[in-house]
Amino acid sequence: MFSSVSNGIISRCWSRQFGWDEADGPLWSKPARLLPHGGDFEDYHGVMAMDALSGSVVSVPQALQSELGPALLDSSAAPTVNATRLSPDLISDIIGPVFIGYAEVVTGVPHHPVQLLGTKDTEHLAALEAACDATEWDHGGSVMGEAAVMCGIFVDGTLASLAGYEVWDSTIAHISVITHPEHRGKGYGHSAVAFLAKHAAWKKLFPQYRTLQENKPSMAIAQSLGFEFFATSVAVRLKRGE
Image (cartoon, rainbow, N blue to C red; front, side, top):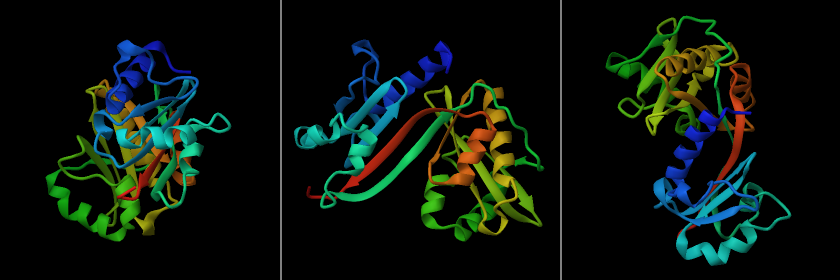
């Protein structure tokens, strides 16, 4: 369980993302709360569903709220499950289920030399991106100028693993990590995230880790470093014209 301070940080951040006013009550609700898209999801043509320990929230384009609402709020299953059960004729892509966790205390340490990265490492970043699958990079890569802080592990001059974080709401460090296909299974990702999570905590930021639940190596990193489960999310991109 998270402390009241941590819960407050998490709630404020996600309320802003969903465009929810906390003066109207907690974002997460039992039964699930259905919202029209707002905040960071304003222009997303899809369904964003989150199931947390304290309840659920699901957001959809306002024009589709009445059409999709009954299926998404079906009490026989969680909204994240219901979202994946929408008609295949509507769905373009599904991202999830995704683990969302936070570390009040980072319990692990790096087992390899890790260094902070900067503009001097642009070519190394480009080489790592080129070596990775495009979808993998989209989920775990970091971009110079977007990430507030990046770190990496080099092996024989090659950037073997990269971790970076973006700062959300001046309070949360949203961490991403990716490892070169030829250097996986050696603990480099663990070391990079351990270093970065501790760096975030040193900066008085709350480390957040998101990963696909089916990504077992990434889930193992989260569990070994003290990232506790907060919620499961699913994003369902809808076909245009629906």
